[in-house]
Amino acid sequence: EVQLLESGGGLVHPGESLRLSCAASGFTFKNYGLSWVRQAPGKGLEWVSAITSSGSTYYADSVRGRFTVSRDNSKNTIYLQMTSLRAEDTAIYYCAQRGIARVPTALTWWGQGTLVTVSS
Amino acid sequence: EIALTQSPGVLSLSPGERATLSCRASQSVDTNSLIWYQQKPGQAPRLLIYGASTRATGIPDRFSGSGSGTDYTLTITRLEPEDFAVYYCQQRDTFGQGTRLEIK
Image (cartoon, rainbow over all chains, first blue to last red):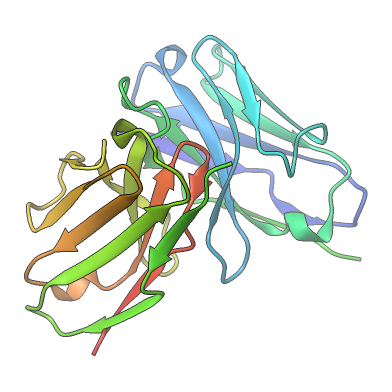
């Protein structure tokens, strides 16, 4: 069974940094890309970042230059390093598996999310 | 950047009825990249449809997707109580704003 477990969320002040982790199990981690998607309280879904199986990375314009996605295949984990955090970054952050080869942006499995709150 | 507009914003129906949800793109998109998700309160989204019309693993056949170009539709025949949720369409790195399907 595929499982994705996010951690690292919390309350931070504007301008501070935070690193999220997403630990994966139940599939051959190195063969799959993963994405980060966030959801502000009471709002819709916003794609944040993606990392492919080969390590290529992609970012939404709203986070490019502030967030960095990486992966450690030895730990079956991806990370999202977030710097210069803003109030508008407040959201639940989900990691999700890019599980369909012919539709790489389709997110087949999702974690339960971790809440990031940016407030003074 | 392509924008996705979902309509209606809220759809009120009764169990057993048919639901038709729309997703319109600001320009023509690759049909293969059109995706639908379901999200229930307090839960992560769940993949329903990819490639505009292919049901994901385990998704009941009362869910179907169709469309091409700029106009896509998610249809749910014979609504079950567990189908009342928010539905999102996605194309590459863009999500629609969602349609909330509520019990009438």
